[in-house]
Image (tube, rainbow over all chains, first blue to last red; front, side, top):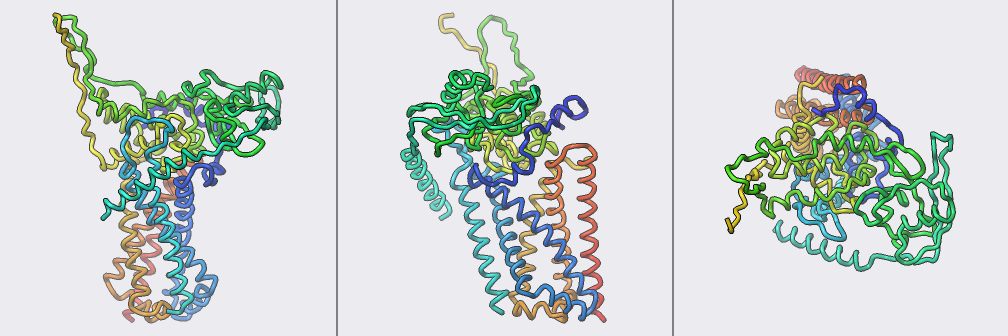
Length: 157
Length: 284
Length: 119
């Protein structure tokens, strides 16, 4: 429990939004390296997947309306645009999952190296290639999954 | 096979780091244009940028250039600085969009004929390049950044000096986090701090870990409870921006994830509490 | 307004993530492994799926795990945007309500579809 709870004056002071970057700050993935890009993508894919999940739950509920309603809905979703959206969803899902696994390990301090005695040029040991390569692997897996998804959806397999 | 793969990745990484530092580019020029953010709400001056041309040499830092501009072109520029050697953390500002120490950034390492200098983001703005650090220091104080030990004093029959025994391995666990100069660059770079006013920020959280892992401190559980909050350690998402801007190699992201590892149960608190030992004088 | 500590909530978030990964992978495999993708979406084949108890359990697991993980993630994002007691309590209540609503709606679909196949 953080100690400023209940201290109204301190809460007000801490709530000063003067000069904070706001949404612009966390929506900008540039400037700071791969980990910041992966954070930005993880957020966007998470929100995107949640929106898809809600839509998909509604879409699949059309089965309860009988064959006619189901076929009508399939005509709407089994179109080139529908397939493109699904391919993007596949990419988002694979990226979010693979990067998520990397983050579970990173958040537990695994794969980040050990503290030591910093020396010039003071490179951060946590921003190492071992966990950074997890981001690249997630991106590659997402691309491969999207290609496979496209071959299934458009290839008529 | 996994170990071999990890070994290969680490070898490539070491090679790239060496090459990167050997090949760091220098952009040599005789003069540079400083685009300085100017604003003074209290005096009714609205935000705008002033462009000032200053002469530079190979080792001129951004702080040198700003002080030249202040001395010879416009005495009203508001700047905060002190040690000029990356030790005090006073001269933090955004240089070309990235939080840096002005005294530690050479003009020759920045591309382009114009350098944009702005106040640190996420800190309340006072004037020109000067920002208010009270919130930042309040977050730090809230982490109780001091050794807490239930048995700090030992009453001995004689007046021999006592000290907490701490091996070099014990010191290595927290040493890099103790190098923090509270410059605020990490707080400015953090995407969570950009929107969450109650988030303590990378500096405070890494200091929480610094004291948590110090074996002279016995308040481990209290420190874990302090950060286990809706707006505490869990709002860090390892964007790594804090560690990428830190000028002292503190690597706050590492400290935060290691502390979170204890909360998640990935790591156990196995620190051996330091004991008070009498230092025996041989000539007694 | 907190029944669970934030560390407990986040442990649930990580566990639901890993579990959801497995169940969603099986769900996707079932669409492409047994018959062509297009054929698997025909009315008769979809209804037949809902007669299989393991498949129903799979779908229900996906509903529960993904709802919890997704809406908790949304809660985290919204909590970071504004900080006042009203907003935080509102976001928490709405997230839980949305979770329950989506699980209920999805479960309704499963129950009705299962009944349709029996007839």
